[in-house]
Image (cartoon, rainbow, N blue to C red):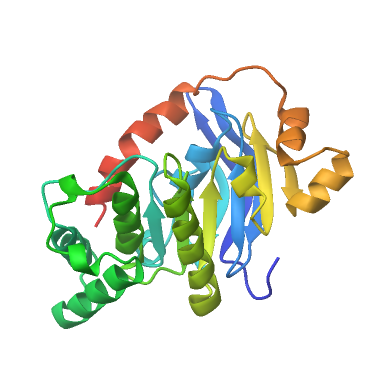
Length: 268
């Protein structure tokens, strides 16, 4: 873990839905500037945990804090310090790139001069400045993903949540997304909390947590966990501790997953 106070701190977190325990006594910390992988089969409790960290859900018991702010007692301060890039598309494709960012900046109550400066900065950062006035519907999948990154960075979050950040992207765009992540970590010490089913990408993380049935099964540096388990790679480790059986999304996880983009759009 990197030095400093935790960017994310979770202590004995529990979340139950009608007798189903989606998160079961979960505890971990994420250091500032760390790239943290949050892994698990479908229905493992990942979505529920992230929804609590993003203040969309209240836990049944336990505590969670992000950027030093309590997720239950200080939800507004938490939201001011996080950005989220969802797996599901959440841009308004009827608007231009510029208009999407303008709307986001207004939601976060950014003053117009600062908002406009920031819009130019992030569009240049993701190499979309020349397409600022183009309707998003005309963008390729990779361009939309880069615009999602730009929008997530508008208010300069200290912690950025990434949900399957490069799924469906071509190798060139995937490489560019990872270059942007590395640049943000070096220049701004941004903390990244990433879910992914790509074990190759998970091996890039400083540390990973592996969940199943709401419980934490493994936590540490990928290389250390692989060596300790005697596995060939992270995928082998993952399968050895979670099993080979096919999984379906749990009901509670699926409901949250379908509704969270809508909630995030209106949370301000």
